View 1 (cartoon, rainbow, N blue to C red):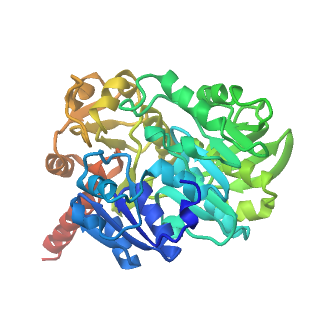
View 2 (view 1 turned 180 degrees about the vertical axis):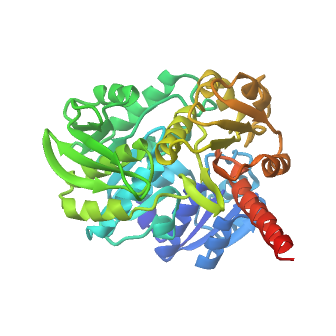
Length: 472
């Protein structure tokens, strides 16, 4: 496959083009002047955006969709018996999985690969903006939408490539990064990794691929990340970051600010390097910013450039994203679907909103994750005042794991819990229950993200009718 990107291949077809990973790759190839086509099961805003950018997008899967493609790239979620996969192989068209294509696409770049169980998308977005603001003109592929980039990809003209390096289906193992970041390592994706040790072993293989002249930068506060660092080749240059003073990079003097985040001082080997302001909430975002600072420092980016970037960074889509405010009811949406992410998001909400009522609306994502991490989920919501639990978003799974959302609702500890199976029922129940002053967060990686806008609209409609009655 070596050199496949530079051969005279001008038509690339993506199977699963609407996913976070492939949609970004499709955007990059469109910007490079390739003809891009692709297919996906369901319509989505991402598909609409790709069509507007010039891609030919099909709904469903059919052998005829491959057309005269020179190369086919398939999502990790696409099975080998997909008719487009079979048609391409029968006609001798190269078929690559996403990880294989990423390895080819990034091979000739100075690659900055951001890996970890949590924080990848935000850290990758921060780094992309930091390099762009400093004049590095990077190409980037990110696993979530970033409003300040108008999408989930950026096409630059330099040798720098910033990539969200996903561990799912071993996708990051073909990469050869100049800088590898590991934000944390925990057990997740139990459909791929049966144990935490299996996750750790895969991350060990990832960091072993850092270039001989490169850097490994890990969160020293995280036990999993430290274990991965300890297994890196002795010749690898390493840096740690975190809140603890033993880290090479430390975030110190944290103070909540008036724009929703924290102010902090970045300290390198005991020397203060500058004061920073964040508008994205939560201590976890301080760590993400510190990772960005550590990487940027190795590249020679000035502190003043970083201060500017991080102060203006507005976050990635579905990361504590404001949905709307109706009176004193504030609605946010967050992708948090792992117990650690839920804890971090709710802690950020509590730090930001103090004693106000905080309600979490949680949709578990996949039965396998709920089963594998069930006990951790039961204690993840203690910073909320009330939790509404809806039925599991199954994705590709069936419920063969003997666990349900109702089981979780019965076992949640330290918080008032309401089990409401469907989103329509959730909307009705929330309209009955919602007080005048409350912060509501929809949490999960599934379609729970659609509930917040529906709730906002329903509250606005109700408020309008109340005003009309009073006026009449």
